Length: 72
Image 1 (cartoon, rainbow, N blue to C red):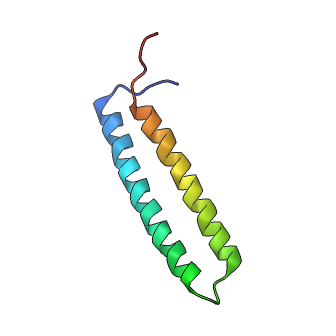
Image 2: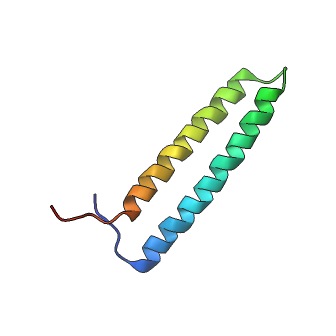
């Protein structure tokens, strides 16, 4: 993978990770509220969980981009 070396790009990626983590926490809270509701829409709950997993994957991918490659 081509690692970014520009400090501005690294900073942008780090800010994006922080933003995605906040969205992930917000999604957690929304899912908890929906699960607590007896009349909750199961389809909506599944969509929120899928979106939460997508956010987790994006966070992992971006965090991996921030880790510099080590020479073999």
